[in-house]
Image (cartoon, rainbow, N blue to C red; front, side, top):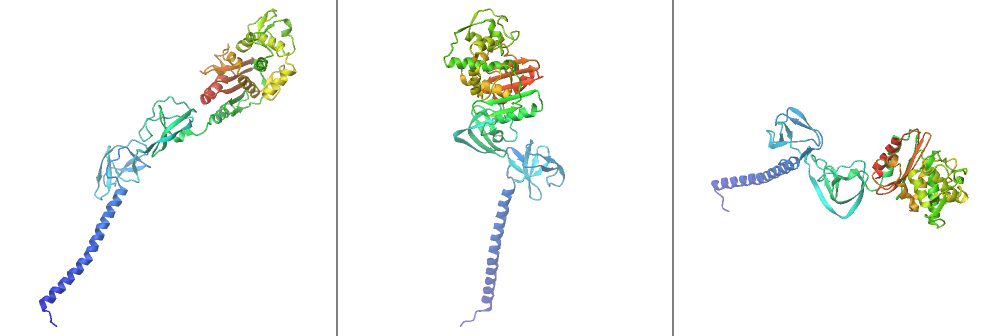
Length: 432
């Protein structure tokens, strides 16, 4: 066996040492590169690399007067206007924003976000919603800095949405021709009558002078306060007679063109109205013929007591048993034509029965001498109503022909016409 010379042994030893150093150093260098890459990746997850287009903050964020973030300056608040000038790295290696006012803040994803539309999509099928007591419409899905736009959308109205979008502030829905609304301000069902009840209880329930009954005719839902409280109804008690006359016309027992003679007997039966009350017909019998349709107009449009007595005498047979039976069948209770003491609810049910007859009565009631006061005063749509006044009592009972018609019956004691108008306006603002 050949023995290596001393020089060769030294060379071999040196080679082995270098190899060992290389084998140890290579994984260390690799680990170092991996560590640096990880740090870079973590930095990209923690800090902004460029300025957000519409900066906002999740919560109050402290700003500093120096880039090293050592001297506190002020606070940034969510949804406030934030002007960013540039992004830079301070001496500690931390990315910071320089604000337009010269202060600095850490450019952290934990504090800042770019307030923008995250997703937007068209719906396969349009959806129906209802607006609430607050309608705010935007040109685009809401992000910080957006201002509401003008819109014709009314509170508590039915809408149809065709698109939806998500932002950092929530979900927004698009109404064609109007704009974007916050989902939180919409409801899937019609809650208008519940809101009416809330308003009535808040504003009128503590007052004994009001008796109010409201009913949506499409849903059958009711809102009311003191609605069962009986009051002297005055001329509101002409509603049962009007219902009965229409009932007899519908059954073919009488004709609208049929004439009735104004004799002295019509004003003297026990349940007759006093002739000196409202109306334009002669207060004393003139023995002239009047058609049933003409008498209906006098009762509805002028609240004429004499016309009421003529119809009550001849058509209702002085409010006989058949009359009482017919009225009870219509509203589920008796109506005393002498005492005339009923509730707003009873009167409302009577007006609903007239509405269901779909006769000429509602048209006559929509054009009266009293349309510029009480319920109909400030309401622009058709209102068929019957007023009643006596002593300290002032009433009005109506069918309001909004998008969905409703009954509004307001009985008052020691209240004014304007008080009735105020109640009507509150209700109509919601149910229009």
